[in-house]
Image 1 (cartoon, helix red, strand yellow):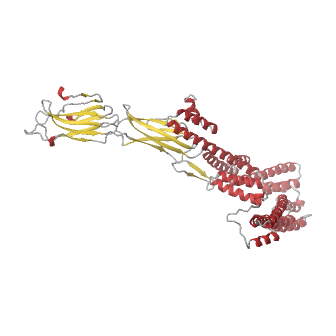
Image 2: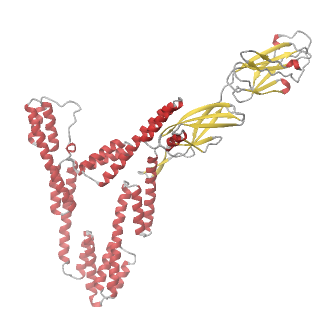
Image 3: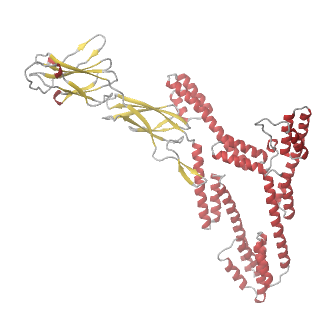
Length: 628
């Protein structure tokens, strides 16, 4: 048995040979043992580090008293471990610990210890592939404020400052117990690691570099893998979406409260909804309507309280007036009953007068609310029952008023259209005609502003015209043509138009020439400001914050608005935040590269510099751990 165990030593390397006599001895026919009868070695599976390799030896025939033996020797690396024989010596197993080649011999030995035949195979173990992937149980959702629904984002869109599940898989499958060791770059935090994966969190958008190494139960490294996990969705975008979603839910709650007649609570809830999403037009307009209705409800309630006091004093006429006004302002189911009860307490002989007065008071209430058609109807009914003083005259006055309002509305609408088309003088004339028919404080103020703008444009147009004449006198015709055309854009005149036609007979402005508009001279109208606001809203919805801010600034320079200013400040804050995050991330990325190259000192300086650009809790924690 001792002859079956061989060991060889040399100066350059240590060779470990494990030999064991096979348990099976087969009878063989007498004769010469041929080379073709050497053992044929086969391998059961592709060899990998840390996983047992199983070799099998097959022999065509075995001489009498001969035995099968094995030897194993690494060429340059470490000795394999867990070496054993199986199936009576015909299978040979061992576990590689590195990727260096391993030579394995299977041989047949006679009873005297002489090797009759031998076969050799070289095994080159490989590392396992360790793949890293994200585990998305449920994709992120954002709120579509136009369709009022949530929509799911692509699973590869990950949220900053939120845990992301990461797992690792070994390929091919490892047959045995294993564990993982995880590492991340300094800007990424590892949360709750376990055998199958980890949670990571990055406070800002950017790339997280994740590395994992797999080991078997004996601590042998099986392989490793690295992946860059892109965190692409900023926290503020997700928070804004959540605010808009919560705003809509809160607004629906406000509507339910209103329908259940909890008016005060409904208005407060709707106000909270608007705070969450101040630019939601449906909530904003709905709150305006709700607030106006609540004001009417309070007015009606006050009138009913006054009526109750008058009834207690037997002042039925005055009480009826208040009850009827309250019912017009805010009708109640029992409002008509209250009015009838009050009427029954009035004197019989005044029944006709009271009925006529009721109709007159109701008409007057509609009149005060500017519901003129209803007012006319009730005035006519009152007049049929009893000819009260002033009713007929009021009917004629309302008819005249309605006619004037209709004409005024037509003139105002035409003026608005002309203003949007840039025809300010024509719009000014239409507005004046409307104001003469129906006095309106807002329209009067707009007329004053428009008159000022027209005058300023005329002055600027004259200045441009005079400058163009000077250029033309110096044969600077292209510059003169440009100034004449800009003058026409500000305030058209026959003289400027004539000079443009004269110059364009011989010259043309260079392609791509940009003419200055009234807005460039700070002489825009509210219609111009509205146009820029609408363009800014469209750019904002596309995520183009810088371009949107430029549009809002132009609108604000034309027509100052606290709402636009507040919204502009929020956008500019987001732009500054985005730029500082991008600058910090660029520094962190460079620091990560230096850190991975072993240049720790240079990396730490860049990490510190990134903190001066934008705060990052993970970087601060990393530097603290480094004693920096």
